[in-house]
Image (spheres, rainbow, N blue to C red):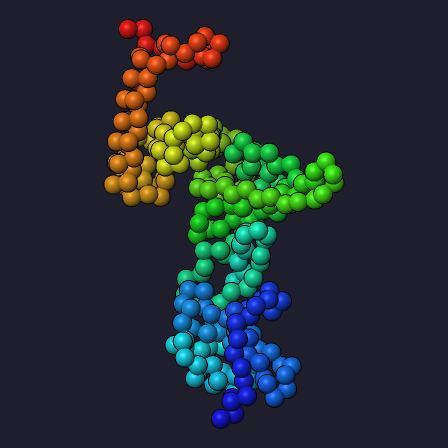
Length: 265
């Protein structure tokens, strides 16, 4: 067989930005890049520069069901934050991967951060994952010793105004009529002991959205899940009522906020 001198191995370095490598052992130099389709890892995508013999060699390998040329597959850029930002080109067959992203302009990114009550200082990069409805912000900072380091912050559940900012569309003054559900959800979540979903339900209530079906649409959740969450909030409110009557009055004055509600029983 013509391909008997080929060897297939998993790429162990980011140098080649691929999943597998085919080596031509007769020359010991030629390397051909191969990817597993991101939405179907049983399909191999081989770079167009590879000879036909490499394609035939891969078609004979166990563990994969099909092989195709890169020119025949869809491709897009994806971005992922692990310990550092990694950007790759991936190949896919039908549905684009969740890590496909859109760049966010600097001014628009700073506006989104400010809407969320986050400090935009040191902002270095920002991008948006449409399928996740999540924006990622990368910051570059330096400490007192002058050492430079990077941090990232994710913002989830972007509202219509924030999604418009991703596209470079700034809201009219009358359109921006106060904090969005997503902003309120984050504030409640970070400043209370309510979980993220409960904070979302409370944020919906605060903005006048009270029907469970509509809340489920806003929070991208199942209606049954929202119904259960509402019941759990009601249970917690009953606990708070008991605490208000039997606990709060005994907190010493200097430890009690002036505006803490106390049961007058």
